[in-house]
Image 1 (cartoon, rainbow, N blue to C red):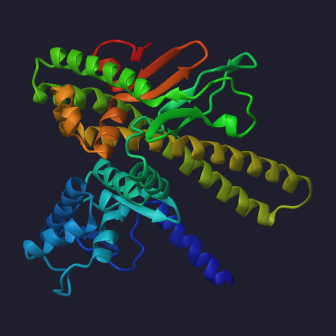
Image 2 (cartoon, one colour; image 1 turned 180 degrees about the horizontal axis):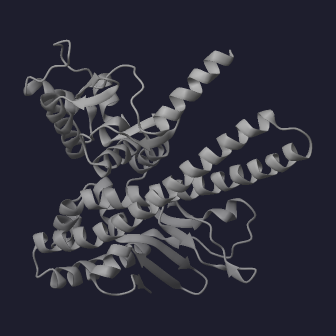
Image 3 (cartoon, helix red, strand yellow; image 1 turned 45 degrees about the vertical axis):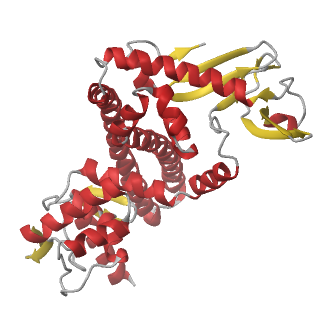
Length: 375
């Protein structure tokens, strides 16, 4: 057992230094003298796989592309979706070596840019996210509620805004169906004074604001979808880069804290008495800080994901905002939601006072050189 632990420690130390320690050699590389060296022809196929996935957002589409271009795996067989998924989720291709859930810069050459790898992971997470699937199902049941997920109750309760979400509801009088949004706190403690809000009136208010934004953006972009797309790319790209830098620093800090915890664990195994108590306190403090940093990293990663998606959709969003009023009438319900959420971050509704505050996505405020808020 002691020998096995020493081997594990040695392998772990090598991986933390970015060294290849053996195993199945990833497609695109060959192993020589315990190093990963690039196979140029295979590497080009890997790059095509990532590019196709980012454009099509589907493993099956990548498989079809590989088959159509007559690309085969090392055994000469057709690529399977499972094999494609393994390539598209392997951080080795971005220049990293893994140790558990942690990534370390590898000694080998990356086949793709780390940002491209991260972009693919964001898209994969979006494809697999169960909550998103549930939301899509809900929208399919009630597709006309285009403000779902954006509305927040701002009715004052005990000197501060309620803060609960407004959710879709409806009622019938005879053959007429009335749609509205209502504060979910009324289902919990009935303390909120906000009454149900007419859905059509609230949606028209938000859509009118989006139409104003679209008009202003067209003017700033010289009236062309290409100009608007370029402006959107510029603004979201800046925010994305800032978020990526923050993510990188948090990752470095998380790796350092994880290394500190491991080191303290090793020291604890040999300590006793007062020294052990001291080491345990240090270890617990480091572990608590690691948990906080991990939470911060998850939040920043979510922000990066949203900005990545917005950047990817820049061309589509620009086309929809061009001549917005006419385009809106022809959009499918799911695309109406997509357009709204690309422009609007949240809508605070104070029903008793009749106030509505629309918070635009940061890129809109920057593109308009404003603060991104409108009442």
